[in-house]
Length: 40
Image 1: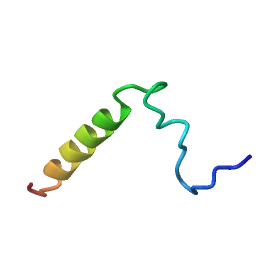
Image 2: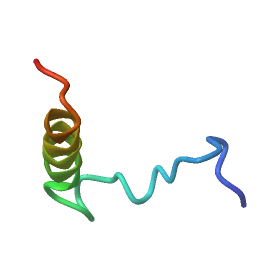
Image 3: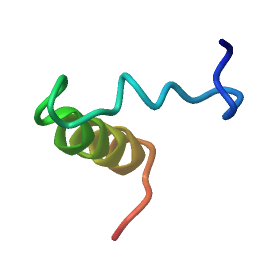
């Protein structure tokens, strides 16, 4: 059955299967934005 959320995989984001995934993604996004000149 295809995902009801185009572009998202809710199974990949399951904390039980991928602990720390969200933290890693947010950290990497922050690093990339800072490198481009964005400031928090």
